[in-house]
Length: 224
Ligand code: CTP
Ligand code: CA
Image (cartoon, rainbow, N blue to C red):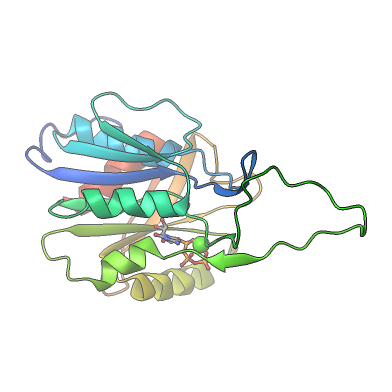
């Protein structure tokens, strides 16, 4: 992969990219979150703009700078991200779900800051499922929109990783699935990335590695 853009091959196209990680509020000062920095999603937004696309970036708690020249919509929770995606996706040529969306949220959000309870030494939180935004889009008719999902997996074995990825693409109904391995030190917040992409019939369509901008261009090459 390369970090330079093939000029203009996304000119006149509209692309929606989600990036970052959602935060699910518990009370006015606390949330459940994840380690996604938003770096890979921001790189995709940046790369798409450089290739001539009109870019809407749905940004969830980014830990990196926002790219220039994009229409940025700020969200925090999965519900907010869902609403922003549903508003921006109709008519888009490409939707890239690079954000790490929380699978669960606290069942109740306290209006007041929660106080600790001295009657026991533990605390049990009740969580409820969040909507699966990618699967919703994937299971609606989306002709004319290339839908790209991401899967961050901790599976160490390559064959197993592919099996998990194929099952996930199928379950989500997306056109392309970008798979990368994550761990305590790999994937999140790091400058480099190594990914595989799975196509609609489960085949590996490309492998790209390098800095996140090069990986972004490799992903967009497949989208184009
Ligand atoms: N995703 C989503 N909405 C959710 C959860 C995930 O749109 N509530 C999207 C992510 O943005 C990503 C893809 O689905 O593009 C895969 O996310 P991942 O967490 O790997 O998949 P899950 O189906 O949640 O599976 P797992 O149980 O492995 O977390
Ligand atoms: Ca998940």
